[in-house]
Length: 85
Length: 475
Image 1 (cartoon, each protein chain N blue to C red):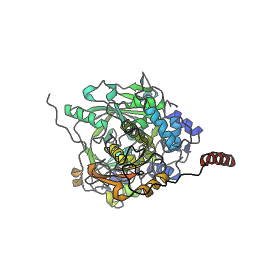
Image 2 (image 1 turned 90 degrees about the horizontal axis):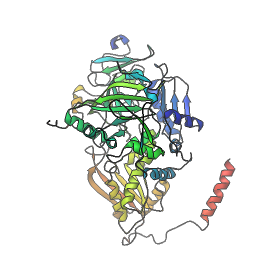
Image 3 (image 1 turned 60 degrees about the vertical axis):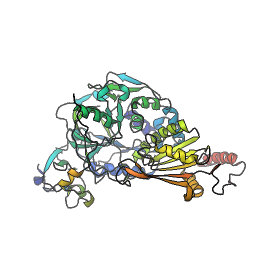
Image 4 (image 1 turned 180 degrees about the horizontal axis):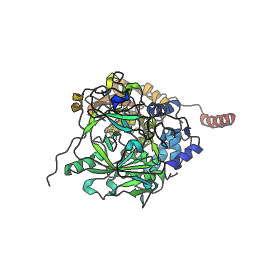
């Protein structure tokens, strides 16, 4: 089932509001839950979670981000120069 | 002293000692598991572990939480008296720690090899991973022992490290990992990335209780965590070698084998971290899992992490105090005990005798230059040898009556600190403070401490007598 067909889940990522959502996996017992993932910000959520985690309008403001913020995340640990062989 | 062969054996003991609560209700992965893990440490300092076996969406999954989450469970792990005080556990832990190194015992096979998945790995099917806090960027594995070696010296068993680093499950076989520069695994990754090679690792989930304690200790680079676990449990530590040559605990429930991908970073987090704040987002390395092995009907172990006190604060308590104590004692034999149980040792309390005036401040400075102190020990309180640093009533008495801020508070500007300290500015840089709460000795003549108060004669005898009477009254 795609997120759009699901009904409960819109087309936007709760965290970054991108439309790049995919179904990551389904519950081993069929039909109990679905895990969605945003391929832009890598946020993931389960369909059975509280609405704060699944609904873009109820997602807590402190944790929202814009796709362009991702490039500003600190890079840790730094990548060392390649050794010359 | 007691060694447990696996998590199941320890759970049996917890069960027998009424330190295991079995939840038979069907539960949701969110928010039930994290909420229960949070609530259980709010109830008591003697809380039990929690076992769940009816998880919505899974046929047979089992989850345990709070295995290390009380002084009682830690006492049972050490094989000391169940009600042993924190102070007693500290001195017993130090005694074992000082016997380092122990030995590693190699086995050819282990129960975790019973079921092997090496095609189409889907971690979400195999393990009931769940979200801990609402602002977490996804689902995390937070109590796994991660094994790595130095690619420049792959066969050197002493350079093999076992550490607990948070893992974000981002895809069916894709994880994010947080190896901050102070972690030994960051050294291994740096060496692999200089060569442009992936770093092979193994991830052990659901372990007998001593290896998570060793894995979360600050030891010197080159000190094997398995050899540390061996002295802590008083018995050689059993391991099995993976195809890549990594030692993995014999008693694990799950073993994930994979690679940290060379020179790749990807958004990770946030994650609710030990200072009681979210970590923010970072671009961290990425792991691909190639193979998952597990016992039949495996038990998934996790730990709730949030505003202290949580299971993590118990897990990283005595094992944080002991190395600091031993390192300090080496140069300052006057040191009596060290309490670094608060927030991984951001605050450290040391009790010591004083050689001469000003000595306590020197001890405080040394705490900050120990390997662990470099990233923690933001505030060091030094108290007299007669004050028990594990008894906050005594410590607060010392601070409230021995300290004159005019001369007893020393602030050192802009030192290094763990990046996760939310008060640091910029992240990783912080002032530090020594509070000298000791009684001044010559030539420090400050204050009016000439008429110290002690207990009436025969108090010790009366304490013993009344203690015995009380015990009888209450049994």
